[in-house]
Image (cartoon, rainbow, N blue to C red; front, side, top):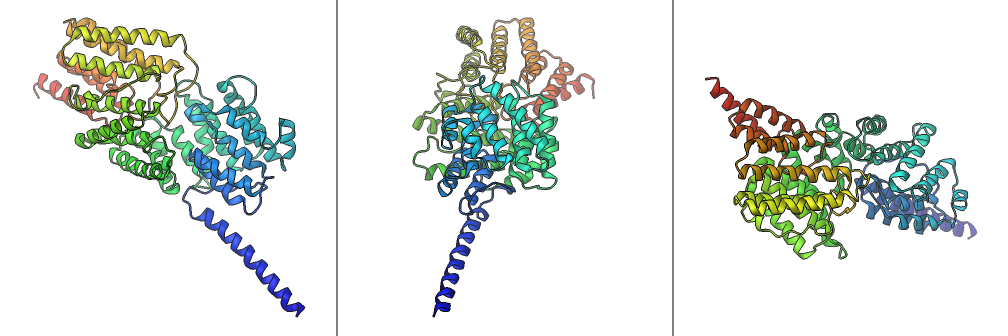
Length: 524
């Protein structure tokens, strides 16, 4: 009888344990978020949630990652790295965002002081990761200074923990996040080499794929990340951001079919998620919607692109968040610039750049100015320029050293401007001044202003995605030179435009027209 009871007890325990393991396996195997190999101290029940949170963190699905880290700690209150993970979700290095208070509160769940928190870590690796959070949410300096200190700490960890993919991937990310304004090619290349080192033995690592794409997100380097771009959306198909990210590389090389395909997938997934979330402040990823529209414009599919702008106008009307208003201005600008419909249906959509970044304000002014130019209303155009100049000079007094946000709201709701923002605003202002000079019949002044705009734009860092300077200065200058009967000089400007925007439709058209004019002049 005792043997029978013992057998039943043992069988029941084995069943319960096996079922628990299977449940945890289903939790991790059901997702398509990439592959990570982790070595941390947590219970068998909590670890699947931590692992999923880690993969979501690499995919920049911060809210979902946070929920999984919180669940992991709920199941294992002693799980130190779950608190680390939660704190990580409140810092968005490539978006130049940080919720300092929430990050500090997450660490406070472990213990009240850094010393007490560090004492809870069970290994040197956990202790070093925690120390990174103490730097990130420490009292020293502003965010930019803390980003630099954190990157230096991650470099030490990278050297100490050779072969640890998570240390390496977060080191690569810290390098990208430490760059100030613009693109630091040497630092980006350093991050790319770290990411490539991971991919050699784990080609499905979501962080390595993601950060490699960001490192090579410009026309010069993008061909080196094409393989990663094609892999990433398959490896992490359950992450809406991962569905979008390959289009950073596709835009940089002018693969418009792929741009459209990537962002349809990302928008569709994000819209479905937003529908299920009753607290959502958006209808989906406006970022993906914007890039989808831009891809359609490059394909010449104007009717479909116009419908997306109309959709964005409706979304903004129903939920007028700062992000929505910024994206509406961006989408309207790219649409009008690519189609030339300065007085059509889209031109009539009302926008508001109130409380938005100076670059977004300047873009809205530019659209108003171009509408005045299309009506040949020199007085209205001059008024727009005066307003634009006053806003730029006011913003110049608030300039910061923040970098350009990568793959977020485009910085539309970041009010403190950086130098890149001011440069973009000045380029647009110079372009409008050239339009005013042209209306006033001053071709030499027009050319001088266009040359200044083109020279300043040439000195700015590559602006990934749909151009923030909605009519690239090289293209505007090239068109002017064609009008002046100088096709050979125009061809040079269109070539410069194509260097920054490979296979852009209007730049290609301009270059082709210049070639036709050159051939006609040469009698061929």
